[in-house]
Image 1: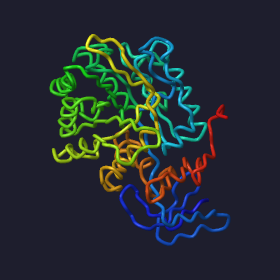
Image 2: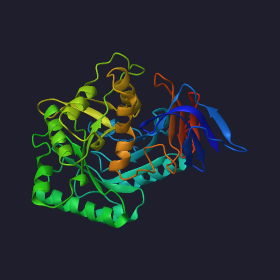
Image 3: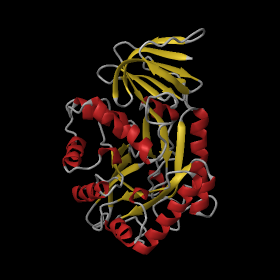
Image 4: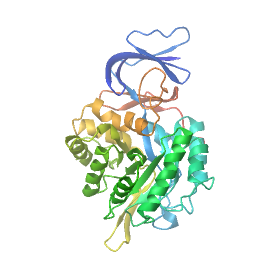
Length: 387
């Protein structure tokens, strides 16, 4: 048992000073004057914030990239990178490359991360169709493979399969049915590119069918402003959008001009339900720039640490209240992925995925499933083959 005493608790709602008791990998109780009992370790959290662990719903855990030929394939993510970013749950997926990258390898990596101590989920599919699966069926992958929550597909991108609206409807129907049967969210995560159609195929599918809007969950929605406006429209219909965290120079947060702040405020002013908006890192994927003729001119690897950096920037640079910034990284993804209240909050019965932070939001301690992964800013747990 571990008892955090006198922490300033954000659940993510601000509860003020509370004690939080952890036992058996779960939060046993949250209260003002809790007692731990014999054998309980007491951690004095006075002067520190206690928050749920971050949920990164878009991580290329087996690596991504490859658009600049084989030498541009990005490496697999390491557990230490995830922990140092304050992330206690990830959703792994494939990207452009569904030829040298496989779903089997993805699921093996997800299972490995679970064995190393964090919560990990996955999506079948990739950019193209037919969608790569393990069982040969999208529906069976979602229904029978515990880690798989839904399907990934690319739209409005020069690397997308350019499927018809009818094909999109069929895929969404499969995801919907499999999610219902398996008790999962059954989400269709849509990688969005710069294409001129933007979210038009999604709006057409919703117009022509009775599919619930919650199935369609486009990501990279802040790729350009017109796409973002389509995203606000989807949210106001009851849908979900995911914004990709900005890149931050190593160790530099304060004073950076952060466009994410303006986008979130615009969504709020437009009347969007802010609980339907999530932020993710696109960690270990590649970012790439193309010229007007479609030629690759520049690429790099996205840092999973952008999640925590983005959270700090919203508060430090944007002046956003911590209580309002935190849900985009915790309770919102937990709700739209239907992992709440097990994930994304601090309450009795929830998983003990916790972050202890200094007042300036410097990360001090990371707990995943009740296990200390980092404490006093010192990494305690590394991946199996990390030195």
